[in-house]
Image (cartoon, rainbow, N blue to C red; front, side):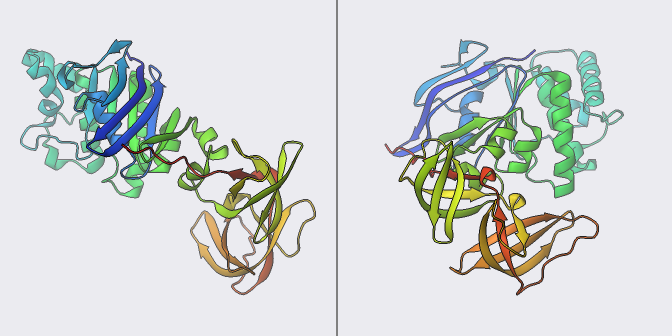
Length: 364
């Protein structure tokens, strides 16, 4: 069972500081939904308001259509997994998992049976009598998930639970978390500053900055069609060129920059004479010996070639001392450029987008 979570025009003020600014979004039942943004953007405050540890200054939070105003954390159909997991080191694993059931007066035999069932669900069969201290970081993560699921929440709230794990384990646990969510069909609301986590696991992502929602969409929409400059810069890498729109025709814009005038797609609310920025991702650029008449082109000099295994990042500099980055797949037979080589930074118009910066947060 799962529930919708409606966050309706919610604002949270701490004195004169506005942590969350008029956020309005609905998380669908059974959805894996992530709030993504830098530290201090308000995402954890939203989680605390959903869980009942903080009451919003304005607006309404509903779970399953029921207004949560005045309802404490212990009476909400939610379970919260903290960043530090908060497991009990002196209890065996099964008692950690069954702790919430014990508080509810469930008999010991039934608690043990439920704990073992959940251990199988999170792929830890036979671990019931182990101590938490005997388990790896990834195993402790699964125990925390099992403990949260034991009380049969309608909504699971996860506050950057993978941040303390090393890269390989984080990548593995992304898949594990997503698989558990699909098996249980519980609504997951996930908080992270890691774009890779959000894009890999989520059905939809809400990108936040300065307490405000900047864009809500599928991972593909967020990455390929960013709503503004903040989203484009925060989610993935981009080459950025400030300038002004000098013309519009057939759904495309002409955009004048210090490096030249380019054709590109205009983003939301970008019109003629708009001062904005052009964004093009490193993987959409070709480094070629000559300009291409069908592409935008900038003459550049190669500064550095960084081999990173599956990809190679080539750093370049143009005549105006602007720097760019080009991403090349590491294919067999790849001929890499050399530092000092002069080439052309070529990119197609339909892969470049002109965007305004993010809207500034309001102040109280």
